[in-house]
Amino acid sequence: MTFPRLLGAGAAAAVVRPAFSLPAGPVTHQGLAHSTGGGLVLNVPRMLPDLLQARISRARWPRAPIFEWLQEHGQLSDDEMHRVFNVGIGMVLAVAASDVQATVASMTEAGETAYEIGDVIVRPDGAPHAIVVA
Image (cartoon, rainbow, N blue to C red; front, side, top):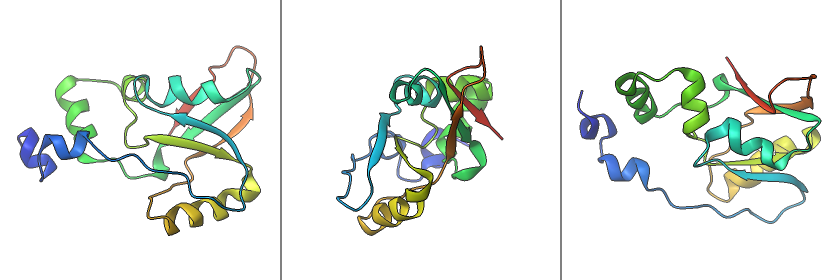
């Protein structure tokens, strides 16, 4: 399958996407990470104190076909994909666990697509600041 056919609307439509704005609401945002130019595992830790680890669950959001195509044709490992690309998660918003449902509802009401993609734990000694698990 060729790159443009894979995307339907063409390569530009998949790569150039409009930015979103955070809706005002009852939730206090704990952190915000724009996950381009360093992917998920390099950008998400920038919003966390050194003693914490972001544990991102790969199964919690759909992966766009363009990332499958890039991985296959670039012969890239999963680790490399998460280090280089945002794999469909352009912005990560950290909120308290008790605020997750309200945050997702608020984002959805504002016309955005939001997923609960992981959690934050105390970082084990010597462990990376962010990991992506299956």
